[in-house]
Image 1: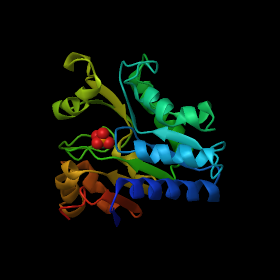
Image 2 (image 1 turned 120 degrees about the vertical axis):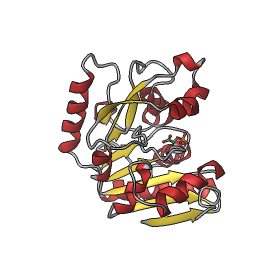
Image 3 (image 1 turned 45 degrees about the horizontal axis):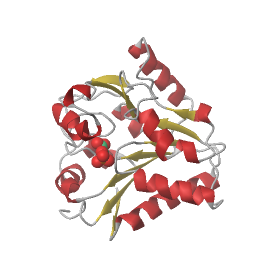
Image 4 (image 1 turned 60 degrees about the horizontal axis):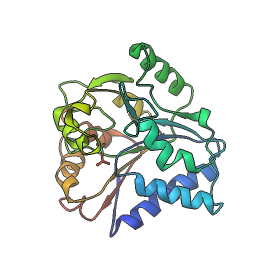
Length: 240
Ligand code: PGA
């Protein structure tokens, strides 16, 4: 693992954006794995700004997002489809028909998972962006006795629903199910970029990067990835 620590979030976000831009400029048809949550927002802001300056074009890029809630339509502000449109897709020249998220509104969720895996099988991910949950989840791969390789439907842990409740009107509105890429799909990415910011991530970062590789901390699997880049601000890296 290549661990880099930054004095400020601004420096981290600019570095991460540059990393994506360098890849796209070398390989205009790059396939990117993208994430939602508060962590990547600054990176997406940088990418939009750099796109506007003419430093990068996404016109031939394909993207696959990690996850999506079940039962929350793309028109709902809490859906990850809406998040991506609002924070990135709506502001760059990425063709809408090459920006993929799992469809949490599909009638047949199992078929949707297989379909998503099928699409990714034809297009390996060049860089997979990841945040990390306080419990070590990546995507919605929650700590468990066993983890799944492929895209699957997951029952969200109460702590994850609690963490996401801030975005919903009431706890009852927080979805109980999501579709997520599995750890197998994530680990297949040529490069993984995991980003963590803030002191509240310091304990789980220490556990994930320096603790045992265990399904009880899905992010610890990245220790076994051949090209994992870990970007931390001083606070998130404070216990390493
Ligand atoms: P956050 O979420 O970026 O909002 O901290 C990360 C995650 O849960 O994967």
